[in-house]
Length: 214
Image (cartoon, rainbow, N blue to C red; front, side, top):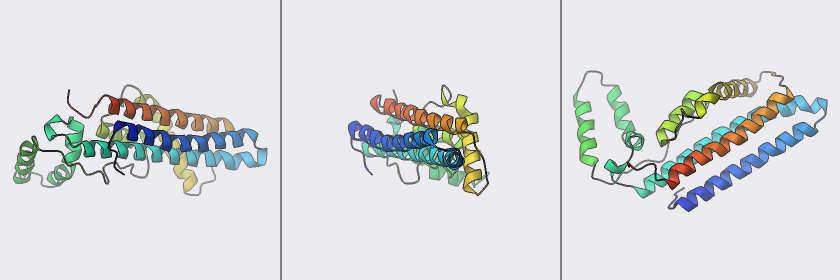
């Protein structure tokens, strides 16, 4: 999907976050209205759906932002370093395999220097990878990729994010985890708030043209 304006991108964030929030709210209401024999199942559902919507929104929103920057295609020297790194990531990865051979390193450096005055051609496909398990470490990498500040807010919630991933994996692989209602409700609220906060992070970056060097 191509986003040609800030307005279209922000509208997309609103749409993709709202339906996710509605589902999470519905699950929370079902837990609160449930009978004891239903509660165990619904609490497990809450964790699986919370993780799914968190990973889904992070990937969709971050990829959409990269798509927007790719469409704008500023010259390379005007991009912030994170988008420059994304632009040359495949070449950087290739250089990692060459150990002491300097030729590929020189080729990469020359390509970068020669491209500074050219329009950036960022590939959106596979630009964002949640690695199937959106741990705090993976999420931090995504934030760094798109230029969202991770350290001032998100690092506080690393234990909770990692715990969610761990429990979700256990349930998804067939473990009979019994969860308390309180925990399930807290996770549903946490993910709703996290989706809102991450959406705000990216929208602020869009409005301020944070992908461009100041």
